[in-house]
Image (cartoon, rainbow, N blue to C red; front, side):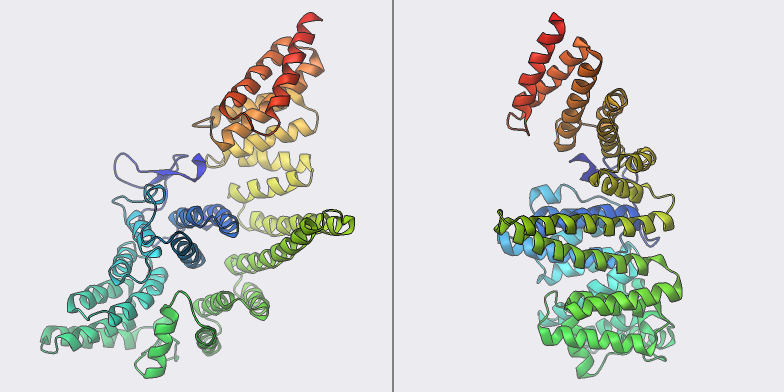
Length: 499
């Protein structure tokens, strides 16, 4: 669908998605998490459906909107690895690659991630991703990448040039602990480099003087001066995208110790919650949820509450999936079906609660209003949905979809005139009308026209509806019930013309 595509600006500046809206260029500003969430939510759904290639693309498109997102970065690697394993590939598909690339820092970063993601053991690709993150000024993602890239360079045949490149990237990221380590490894290759010795001493001094974040040596920060064997092993274990159970335990325990040493540090809280979710035991999700809610109450930063809400929804979605499977395995079991339907409505209500909070805390972001409108629509609450879609249509990125739902909502209320007018606007807003969204808009426009023709006895409107149905049938003969719709409209045209 066009809404998930992108194009490069003709001037070579900021990349744009196909709605024409600029995406972040060079990064440290943090992007737009709310807009990224739309891609991330879709990526999560697609990954769960085992469409890993498309999921990886969607994660990266979300990262285009919010390059600082750590959950998006980590989830991208999960999808990319699943795709590479399932398809036995060591490079992205042409369909994936065409979505990324350009001169701006974030685009180069996304492209580097794409190629490294499907070949994660390649140290040279890891280095490219690290350098791209540094050029885009992505400190936390860059650190995450660096933790994985440095052990890979150590395992390969040591090259001074590689370690020097890493050192420069870490300096730019202000990750002085990793910069020192890179410099030390370079000195192991060439101990006679006096200038490098001086540079490493200076970096070590900067590391010691650093305050806050992961480099806080005076507070005993988790990422302080990692020289001993135990901490070296921990670094290497964290660098692995797939961890053993023991390694995952050590990583969580280290993050917990870091958090307990500085419980008021937001980065320590976020990291501990993230490692708990990565390990993914039921008790981990509960602990992460409680930790994030505590942080929300203490810091009043909505990102903690939003992530806690994501956990609630994820747990509920798993329960709903189990009930769906039970109902599908026993199609004659009315009780199982009723239980699933009841749980489905409860799940949508839960999503609505979380989305309402996001609307409240992001009043100018129309993405959340659109998503909340969809949930009201799913429950047949047309009036509430209409109010939200009327606002959401002002967002160029979701205008076509919002107008499509708005027209359908009017149709459900029996307002056929308003439905026809709105769905015409939806069709006019699309760049193409023969993709998935375009077919859906045309289908509902056909239905709205049929309703209007029957209500007012207008043969011309019925004939136009018939032409729309015929066009859909010529494009995709098995689309929904289009054959029956076409035949019914043909009969309606004859009936109204003869009246």
